[in-house]
Length: 143
Image 1 (cartoon, helix red, strand yellow):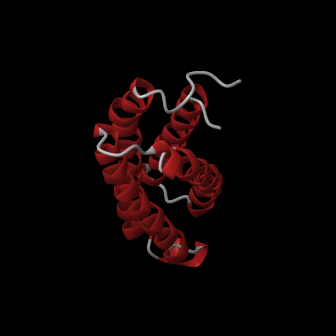
Image 2 (cartoon, helix red, strand yellow):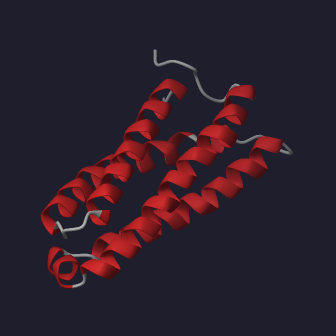
Image 3 (cartoon, helix red, strand yellow):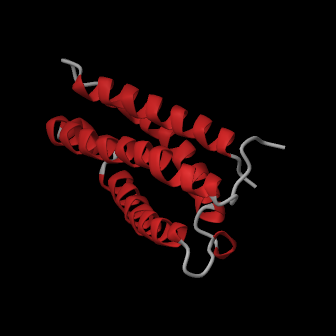
């Protein structure tokens, strides 16, 4: 089972990688190799996190009938599913060859995707995590 401590550590790491990714794509000189490397690192972390998160935050055991948390979880779950699909599409679309041939559009799409990711993480930390803690649905620290 996930703990809030683990969740926040993962969120912090994803946010740092997203910011580093944005620095690479915003640089004056295109760096397809650097962008691809950091994207791969972020992708591995996201896949692990998506798997863990869907198993604890959005599982049936996390829900109770007529609970304020259920509405928040459902909203975050819908957004989570959309973000997962959009991330998969982004990865499929932006191969190394496509990145190198259309750096400007890759740059634009990457910044938009990283903004969505970091916004999602921020809102999850600010809204969902406190609700989950309040309703005793997750441990504060790892066992």
